[in-house]
Image (cartoon, rainbow, N blue to C red; front, side, top):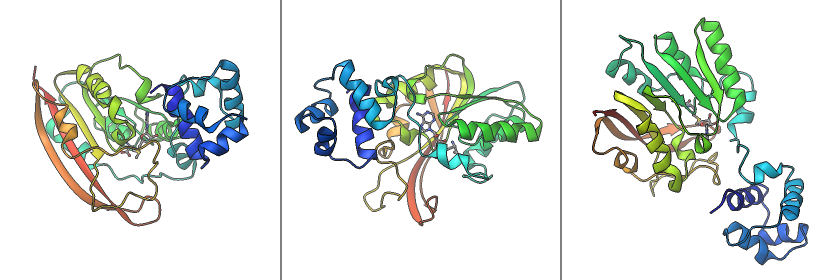
Length: 271
Ligand SMILES: C[S@@+](CC[C@H](N)C(=O)[O-])C[C@H]1O[C@@H](n2cnc3c(N)ncnc32)[C@H](O)[C@@H]1O
């Protein structure tokens, strides 16, 4: 499936339109819209331009050359910290397993409002952190400034970014559910390949359970459950699993109490 077919389908679903309604608005047949979304055909540049103005996005966005932001961009623009100031237990595990007794480079992927990134920098790690949501990064920058420490924050889409540097620790919490299945091995290959020998990958993600209802704020076109154990299956051979845990916890991120099931993993690169 091309970026175009994914995005044209996402935009339609986000606006709660049927294929028929979209086709009528663009004076085309429903079959044409269906074929775009299935990746069977792509429209001419003239039609792409019409679709872009219909949805109020750029042609570059439709073709996948611009980032697709998440609901958090808006949430992070509100006052205060959407995720609060509490630090994920995995961050404390990093301190325990790999304390910064020498200069250690840590990458926080999908850092949100930067709480964990600032926590690591305060504890002496050299921290780089990115997220797709610029408003979250801005909060992180302010937090770092107030703490008198430095974090290299930058905006970037995990799905379209090739890592350049090597890190001692790659840390990413509550982000991998934004990676569709077909892109997972590619993203995790990037993490593994850019981790120094002896370094850690510290990750968690939501897994599907038939007895847990999907959260009310789940972004159906952007968030994708993993299967139990799937995360660990990407870390074989040269990797030693230091922590492997599945848990169910309560959450009220949307104001409506619900539950999640999460797999957590810390893997160490041995060779
Ligand atoms: C649930 S929040 C978690 C934030 C932070 N890691 C934490 O644990 O508090 C998910 C974050 O992933 C970011 N995100 C989602 N898709 C992304 C992508 N493709 N590239 C970079 N960041 C992404 C969102 O903007 C959001 O800040």
